[in-house]
Length: 493
Picture: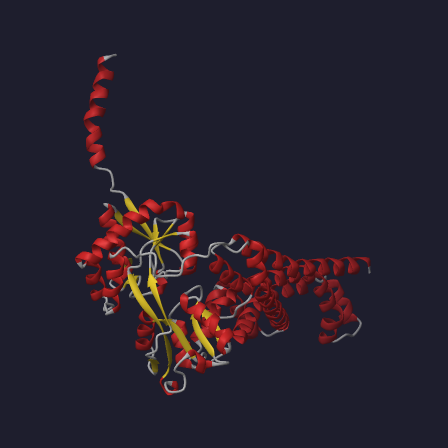
């Protein structure tokens, strides 16, 4: 070996330990949803680039016990279990509730916090609505895929309660204060915060159920889960967990009893054991299919009415931009640009939640108006282009024949423009049918939202996703086929 090679080998040997010392420490990637807010996980008001909350500190505690550095992974609450199963992060921590279904499909830690489900009502209804039995025929809000949701589904059968699902824990309480729902069922951590944020709300004393917060890991991460369980038990024993919950004003008499049971080794016996046999995909589909079909009907009705509104708005705007005065053209052009330049989701939020202090639109009506106004802007561009595509020679001929401006529009220009616009109109209808899935954010349970509930309850998106896709195809393919038949008929004519 040459002297240069020998020197290179010696340098590599000497530098290897230094390089190893300079390596970044291993990371504990933990998933949570900062949209849930305090005290779970929220953006630090003083520094929005970091998150704070008791689950943030629990993650820090676990990372230190594992000799790692915590790294937060933002994940929507409804997707936390699926993301954990995929391995998108090492552990999910964001007020996740223990359940037999979770333990059947994931590696679940021992519970580290006990909570109780309670009922929140308006102050004026404090003596009227004391339990779920008092809410027959009333709208009761909650979060989907939670213990509270399961309680409301059971109450729907037993007491005739109407569950209303939200995708966050803020708007159920604001809508209760506005009178859009009659009560909210969630755990007392969220209920206390909701009552503080919205004046005139009160939490009832009766406990509707008991639940536990846990961490979730991919099923093949059982070894890591066991190490985390040991860290949690040590933190229960030496008071570190208690210190975290006292800091966030969450410590109460339930926690010492929980910790005694955990330290006694009964960490997986607080929820019912998973069923011996898991329902087959066929059984689950048969059970949820009626709800999916009802949701599909809502999707069709909403999409049809919204498209009719969009067509009417589009015709008015297109006609105004072609035939109107200059100021009117400027106003209509501004409307089109504003609607096309902002997300449909934002427009739905503004219509339903933003305008609530002034105009309380029902959820279905807000969804109808939002979709109609949004697609009306796009339709207007189609119709305006179609009107301008009619040859000017035909318009000159109409004027020569003595037709008025209105007669020229209705008898000559509009029929030809409609034929040109039919294909893009059909495409927009199919697109609107799919975009109707966004209205779930304002509590309309359409096809995609019902599928989401289905998937969350069985812990898999495969069968629900395939079934939902098949239903959307059943709804959209006939529209495309009908449009093609009409176009062929017009070409022959």
